[in-house]
Length: 154
Image (cartoon, rainbow, N blue to C red; front, side, top):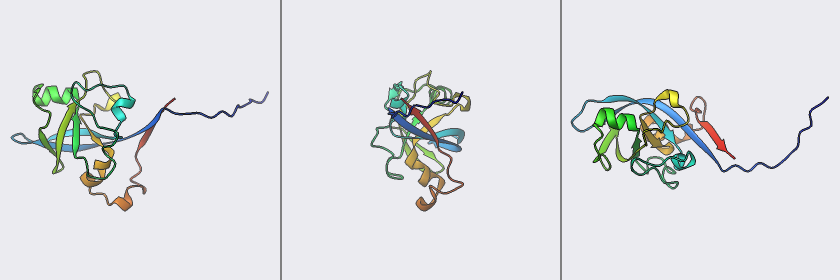
């Protein structure tokens, strides 16, 4: 017997994107650390229901223009293991591939994002990918640069 499909409109609460890389993070007075970074949409954390342990997460308005919001959120594990759980990390300057960034938050201990197997150590706004990887804006949506993963919620 053939299956019947009902055509309904589906409304999504949100669709989020992410893209991860391995990069070197440096802080004044310390050696570079190779870390996994995740480039995410501005309201990624809110979409996943996460609340920051320290500071804040990205605002929905941040990360719209390439390079305009050089901000970074650290994972709990990175903050604890590499920064000794320093509560004064908010506002600290770091560099990723030589690009200066400001630490605005630390994710909660239980937060692993949408792919917990990767052990992401830092989160940046999606628009920071272009200046950090030196990708021309015209190439952003060309193969092989399409590596975004999409997540939706109803």
